[in-house]
Image 1 (tube, one colour):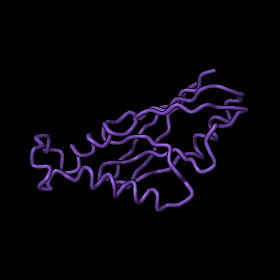
Image 2 (cartoon, rainbow, N blue to C red; image 1 turned 120 degrees about the horizontal axis):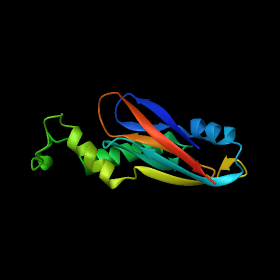
Image 3 (cartoon, rainbow, N blue to C red; image 1 turned 180 degrees about the vertical axis):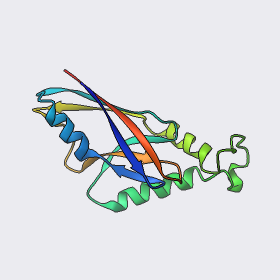
Image 4 (cartoon, helix red, strand yellow; image 1 turned 90 degrees about the vertical axis):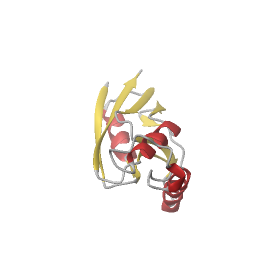
Length: 139
């Protein structure tokens, strides 16, 4: 069973879509299996991260901005792929450091996520985008 989730972003940040995925898995009426999620873009990624305290998402974004600043920052002067904007190549680097696919067990018709775990699209670009995440639930 497969579907595609479309996630609209308003710029850099973490966008939780756990409820959408959970609802789709429940609709499949499959007691157990393995859910694979795959993002079809090279400048964003997927994360399983805490969803109780929003400061976690704020700190994650701040860490990655500090780790890989925009290409107009002096420390990034070595970059050559800059014609798509100062956030583009750093977005590709961030996506290379974080997962673009996730595997989550489904048990008794529900995702086997921990109490505080949520599924996020991690947008690395500054401008709004429409992102596609393909879901595959296998027995």
